Image (cartoon, rainbow, N blue to C red; front, side):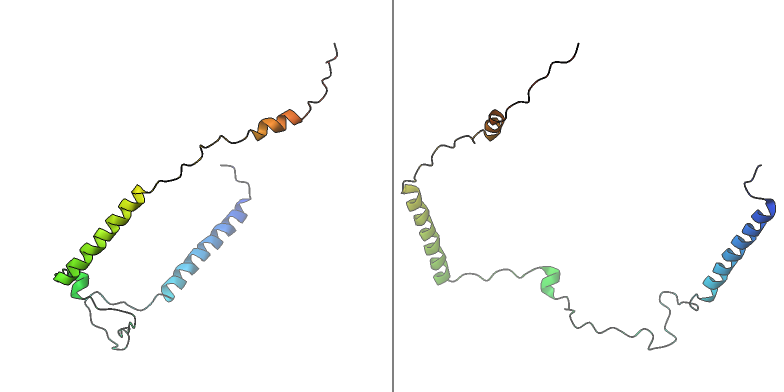
Amino acid sequence: MQWSMPRPVLQVVAVLLGLIALGSLSLGIASAPSRGRLPGQGLSDPTAGAAIQATEATPLGDERIEGPPPPKPLTEEEKAKEEAEAAAKLAAADTEKALPTPKAAPAQPPADRVGDLLDSVTPPPQEEPPH
């Protein structure tokens, strides 16, 4: 196989790459944290895993889990009030339908501005091609 560099230079580069790989591996091992704990295993230092106080947390209430409670039954006064409001809305809708509405003018197509611009432009003089 033909290499672009002399063999001693390739050997130096290979040794440098190997040293870099071993150095990074040893630094990774040296900087790794000490042995971790498994799930369910107790803490050796009781202050290490202290609970965080969440000031904005809200407890799960029955309403969030089961949904909102059913609405209270309406009293006779509330029912009469709602019926009166519904009748007033229907009356307002009927009077609005009974009033004559002004007819809108028929829509006209937009003006042809491009055609006007093209008409105002004079074409360049045409030259005859030489024979």
